Amino acid sequence: MKESIKNMESEKIAEKVESFIEKDVVFEQEAKPSRDQALLETGIIDSTSILELVAFLEETFGITIEDEELLPANLDSIDKITSFVSRKLST
Amino acid sequence: MQFSRNSLRIDAQETSEQLGKMILTQIRGTLKKGGAVVGISGGIDSSVVAALCVEALGPSRVVGVMMPEKESAGESKDLAVVLAEKFGFETVVEEISGGLEGLGCYRRRNEAVRAVFPDFDESRDKCKITMPSNILEKDTFNIFTLTVEKADGRIESKRMPPSAYLQIVAASNYKQRMRMAILYYHAEKRNWAVVGTGNKDEHMQGFFVKYGDGGTDLKPIAHLYKTQIYQLAVHLGIPEEIIGRIPTTDTYSAEVTQEEFFFGMDFYNMDMLWYAMEHNVPPEEAAEVLNLTVEQVERGYTHIKRKIKATEYLRMRPLGFEEYQ
Image 1 (tube, each protein chain N blue to C red):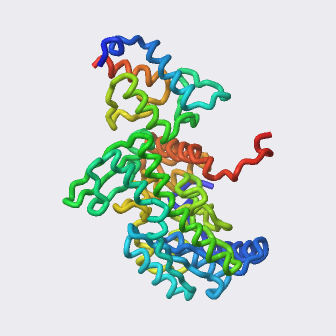
Image 2: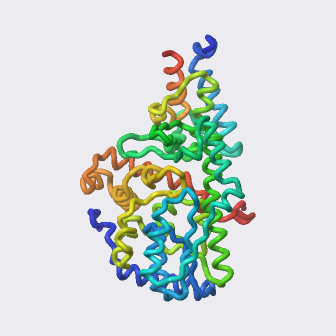
Image 3: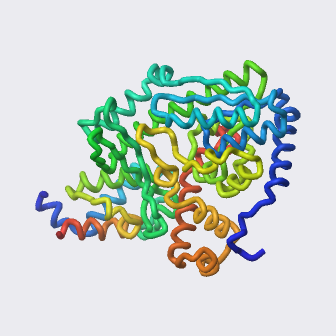
């Protein structure tokens, strides 16, 4: 993994995740989700877009996400995704 | 009314009579059609619908169409024959493997399977896709996993990249869409109606193919929970071997139950939780009645709500300019 990614600050991670969700998941005329908004509950992500999100995270941050980690506790808001990615990068 | 383990009990005789009147009125009156065409699979839902149509219209105005393909379970056709003999309606067998080959159904699906398992050999190996089961035990995403059963007995499962998942589903959906086209052939040549066999669990949680098995003129049991279909089946005298069969998708080469493919929990708990949720039963009360924890009930409520919301588009009609305004 590149050193620049490993040391990425939380804010940078959040910005990348936010940009992906706003560009590839949410229709541009809809309100953008806030960082603590539950993405699944509100129907922003579904069983297809969660696969896209996981593929994006693995590719962008060079991490491997195990099946056991695919939990709403890790991935159900931009804040949760950011914390999860930060934890993965620090291990 | 208080929530109890009997909350889903129906008066099967009264329900059958009401559905019979509805089928007769809608087919002969509203649709101005002469009879009913039902796709029969040997499963409990299509058996109940065929029996209801016979009660409503008489056996001479019902035709059951069996549409097996090379990956169908062999017993499906045998059970459909048993049903037709018991209720006295005409049957037609349409083998659809050739049509599916022509459309590239198997080739396109296998190509996507090989993107995940490069050594998949469809002549020896079998495949299926599943969702997490036991969803009451932990809050999880509804992510499909691809499983390959090798000829030597090894079983391997992997999460799919979005492109493979979408291609497998799109290719497999040819099966239901081809069956819909065949049902309409048999309906139109008689000037009859196509009667759908989806129950409430399938209809509301999106366990059907839009313009496939969801493409029908009538959906007489789409308001009934699966557990209520079982009650109707007993009342109507559906053969025991059909009632006792475990519901499967009969879509993938490896056998997959509806619970592991889609619903994530057994039908009894799902239907009871759903009924409780719809009737605003507090989780504490539902937990006590169903012998579950409050957390399990809350997970069940959440799971069902998410499925209904995520599949709204499947139940939408084509959107016109009126809807945009």
